[in-house]
Length: 285
Image (cartoon, rainbow, N blue to C red):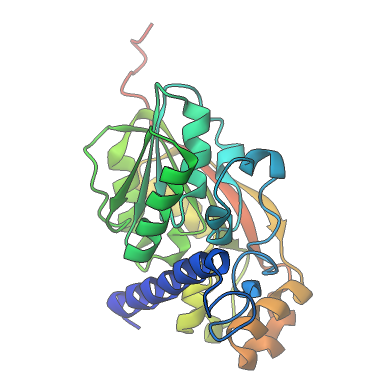
C-alpha cells in the first residue's frame, strides 16, 4: 500500500460523502435510500460518527455541515478556545468544526479549515456563506504540507483525520511548525490499545474509515514527543464494543465482521492534547 493509494482512496471517499450530504438536502436521486446509498452511510447511524454534537451547539448551522460530519469526536467542545485566537482545523470536511470554532474565537479571532478534497471545500464554503460567518477561511492542501507560515496559529484541532495520514510524523512536524510558542494541539482521533489484527491494517476502505491507520496510544505519545511537543495526554471519549466494531466492519467490509470480538475494547475515540513549548525559558518573568 502506497501513500498515493491511501490519499486517493480518502479523496474519493470524502468527495462522495460531500456529494451525498448535498444531495440529501436537494432531493436529487442520491438522497434518502436511493441509488447512491442511504443517509446511514454518513454520520447518523455509524457507531463512530454518531451523537457527537449537542443541538444547542449546532443551532443555526446549515444541515449540510452536520450531514458531512464524519469525525469521531467534538474537538471544539474540548479545546477551550478563547476569543481572539487563531484556530486551524486539519481535514475540515464540510466545515462544522471550523464554524463552531469561529463562534468561540469571535470576530477578533480566525478559524482556518484545511482540506484536500474539492467537493468538501466547495460544501464548506457554501456552509460558511449560509451561516453568514466571516472570520473563516478554507484552504486547499494536505495536512502533511500545511499552507500557513511558521508560528501563525494558536490552536490546531482535527476530527478523526490525522489517523488517515500514511505519514503521521510529517503531519505532527507540520503542526509543530505552524503553532505559535505555547500553542496547543487539541484533536479528536481514533487510537488503539494493544495490537490490532493485521488484516485490518491493510484494508483500504478501513483507512478511509478511520480504523486501519489508527495509532496505538503509546506510539501516538512517542510521535508527539519526537515532534517536540510537551504536556502530552490522551483521554478516551468513547471505547468501542464488539457490537460497535461489528456494525462498522459490516458496513465497510463484511468479510472482516467476524473478527469484531478481537478488537472489542481495543480501539477508541480519544481527545489528544499537547503543547508546543513556550519560547520563554527560566528567565521569563
